[in-house]
Length: 231
Image 1: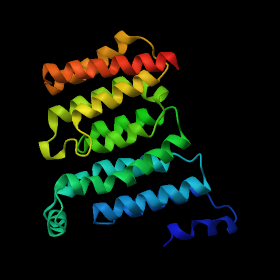
Image 2: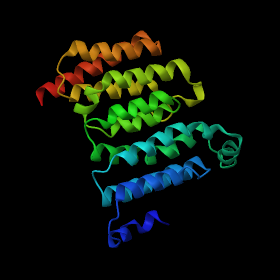
Image 3: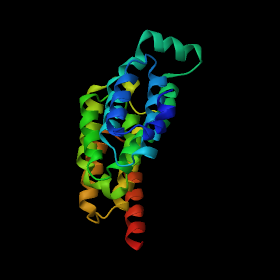
């Protein structure tokens, strides 16, 4: 309710939106349902973007809480909820994706340069739901993604090494993630094909792709590179 009436604070002298957003971010931690909590976070991000577009610290807190509370998705209570709704785990994770995407978009708008690096650092502390990383990466322009590509690759490798298979990529397959990252790199200002190939090949090496998959990925990367060069 307080999130819905945040604009009323404009009538209170000395109101500091950043402090108010930070307080509300902490209050959301008391919401037990992960899905509800994430959409409350997304709503706070929406209101914050309207009232204080350049505020970014609380958005990092929102995303950090989203990542660190992800294990609750596999708690017995939450599992019963999505089982009773005839949902699979991947389908349940997909329900969170719009909220994560919106929070990342608000952060990218407030702090376009260094915030993706902060997201990668947060993700490395809790590398659980890879689809969340995809949503965050997609919120940034290709030039920013290319700058932090090495950190994104590091996050991906951590996911491959440590997370249980139920928490890996859902809507977008792991192979498609490699293609998406490669496409973003090709759209960026990086024109060094060796640098692009080095990053994408290091990802493919963790996936153990077939020869056909690798050939298709290389062909698509070459097409993307040629298109971006012409533009």
